[in-house]
Each structure stands twice: as structure tokens, then as C-alpha cells.
Amino acid sequence: MTPAGADARRGGLERLEDTIEAGLTVGLGLSTVLLAAGLLFAYTPALLWGILLLMLTPVARVAVVTVGLAFERDWTFTLVSLFVLGVLASGIWVAVHR
Amino acid sequence: MPAHHAIVYLLTGAASGIVGAMLGIGGGVFLVPLLTLAFHVPIRAAVAASLVSVIATATASSTVNLDRGLVNMRLAMALEVATSLGGLGGGLAASLLSTQQLFLTFGGTLATMGVLMVMRSGRRNVIADMSVDPGRLGGYLEEGEDSYVYRLRRLPLALGASLVAGAVSGLLGLGGGIIKVPVLNTFCGIPIRVAAATSAFMIGVTAAASVFVYFARGDVVLPLASAVALGALAGSVAGVRIGQRVEARALKIGMAVVLLVVGGRMALEAL
Image (cartoon, rainbow over all chains, first blue to last red; front, side):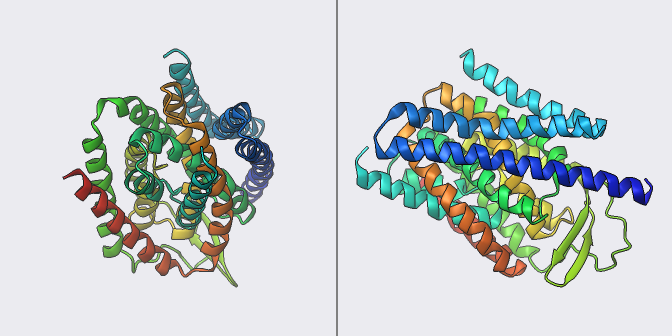
């Protein structure tokens, strides 16, 4: 890879890292509010949605990485990321169909 | 749940979050023994609460580590293939093992990793010559004024360890960092801070691969998991900041001690 190509790829990765960081912060903030409210007021639906949102945050993170890498045309790692997304989807599918 | 129980679980989550984020291992390694041995929580409910708190720790510490450029994203993605498969398999297999077998697996795994870390704690994985190509799965690390290069060695070993780490995570609610960090650092050429940050980035995904299965089985006790996760969130933000100020060798020794003590205690409990 040329140095210019390497720099472009690293720049793309840094933008993707910023997007992931923002996404994780939003998911974390929302679930924190729901969990705190649920515990303070003994309100089970808030606890349920807070936990579900927290559980889904890593799944959303992998989805964002997959789309970001596809935009960067990094097909090898897009496939790798898609595979991980598939495994996570299988876990959810197994859970729903138990 | 009584208020004093919620406070105890919050503090327990915070303590495990601090140490878990410092070492990139998520904190389940402390949480499961504490919840089962000290508070007599059934082991499957403890594992489920631990998986939720591992996700909280991973997410909170990754927001800080990404900002500091410590996460090796490509390496994380490559290893996530193995670790997520292992996580799903471990989650499905958990109901097939007895409590005693779970305790023994947990204790034996931790103690072995502790011995390995002590044996190799003096090694450094960084290269001062910045003209060296880090390869596709290596990278760069800045420590104070100094910059280093590191290269990944033994990719098949890293993948194999990640598969086992995922399975152990699904079985025991650990997140798997307890296996990945020592193996990446001692055998695969990854500096301890990068190994910890990259592991913390991955363990949320590893835990997510199995946590939905626990949730569907009714093992996620909402007030318990919520209190522990909230504590872990706060603790992990503090832990990742403390970890930056601690010497790399001290981090390794601290981790080895924790592995030996907790692993030995759990194995004794099973015998």
C-alpha cells in the first residue's frame, strides 16, 4: 500500500472511531437514565428497556462498523464484521424462538 | 428489592467496573464470585447480571479508549469472529453443565492464566524504531513523549484463545478478557495497554452473543442486573482513567494476583 493510501485508510478508520464513540455514548446515556429511573421509582418497564437498550448497544456498534467499512470499501473487514453481526443475530434469533 | 440491597449491588458493580476497566477484562471475574459466594445469588442469575455489567463496562471504557487511540479496531474485528462464535456456543451449553462443573472450569481457567502472566510479566512488546511496518493487525502506541510500533504475532493462537475466551464468557459471564488480554500480551506481541483497550472494546460483543439466551431463559433478574450495571458504568469510567496512570508491569502483576486468588477460591469451592 502507498503511504498516501495508508494515510487515507487511517483517516477513514479515525472517522469511523468517532462515529462509534458517539453511538456508544448515546446508547450508554439513554440506558443509564432508564436504569437509574427504574431503580429509584421501582418501575419495572424502565428497568426492562434500560437493560434491553444496553444489551443492544454492542449489536448496534457492530452494525455501524459494518456500514462504515463498506463506505470505506474495505471489503475484507466488511465481511468479517458482517459475519460477527450474523452470529449476534443468531443469538437473538435463538433467544426469541426458545 | 430493598434499597440497601440495591446500594450493595451498585457498590459491587462499581468495584468490579474499576478493576475490570483498568485491566480490560470487564469485571465479571470479580462479580460472579462476589455475587455467588458473598451474596448467595444463584450462579445463572449472577452470570446473567455479570454479562449485562460486562456490556456496560465495555461500552463505557471504549468511549474513553477510542478517544485515546488505544483500541486496535482491525485486530478487534478479526478476533470478534472467533470470540462471538465461542460466546454463542458457551451460552447455549451453559444449561448442560452443573454448578460444580461451572465453578471448577472458572477456577481452573483463571489460575492457569495467572501462572502464565507471572512467568512472562517482564517481557515488553513494543519496537522503538518507528520505520518498522506494523502490518495490517499491528499498530502504533504513544506513551508520554515516546512513540512505539507493535506487530501482531501468532494470529492463529490469538484466534484460538478468542474462541475459548468467547465460550468461557458465555458459560461463566466473564466477557473473556481474562483470557484474551494475557494471551495477546504474553504470546502475541500486543502491549498490555492496547491489549486491555482492544479487549474492552471486544468483550461487549462477546457478552452480547450470549446474553440474549440468558435473557430468554429468565436468568436476567432486572433489579439485580440494573443495579450492578449502573455501578459498573460509573466504576469503569474511573477505572480506565486510573489504568492510564499505572505502570504496565504493575498492571500485569496485579492481574496475575487477581487471577490466582479468585481462580483458586472458586476451584476450592467446587471441590
